[in-house]
Length: 246
Image (cartoon, rainbow, N blue to C red; front, side):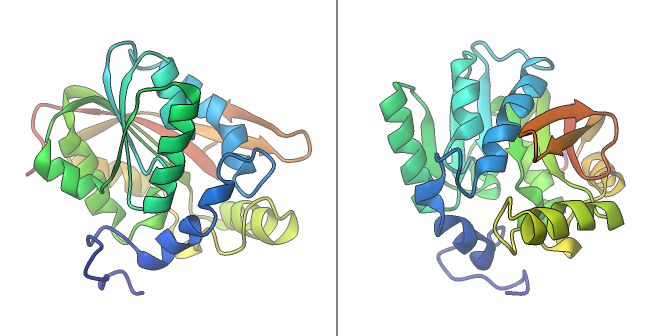
């Protein structure tokens, strides 16, 4: 798929091939030793990053591209009123079942950011979108939809992968082909996003980039920590101004 054509049942923000990768592995999502092990290791750090920069108790929070619900559940446990959306139906089924087992009240929906932004603009205090922008056909358009979902003064948290030689060697060659930490083909180099690109798209969507933080992953020690260097994986904290382009 070239990013401009989509099956009739999928919105334009969806990439059928990308969704298929994750749908095929959905039943393994909550296995901490399976294909999603890196996400299980990343999640405490991602959650802490959000908790330290946003008030979550009682806040209306949206997790976009929620997958099987790792971050979504962590946000709910922090006292937020959480909605999780994903375009992969099997992932949403997995997320719903796991939330029921954990006794968590989370509103899971098979939906995309564009669709929800049209139906419920400015409805959330906090929006998170982790490890997703590099998998959509038009990340700038997706970012604009995320901006429309946030109330004025609200906050957006993103994580994605930088695009440079180091990230190619670390996030693709090493992680996918040498160490086998994630399935081969998970990332495509051309889709990775430089922080400068993210900041430019953000400004065009009425968002201000407040902070960037790198994520350092040590596969041998199974350890993840925040760092200053965003040259491979990085987190971004953005805020919405009063005016957002329609």
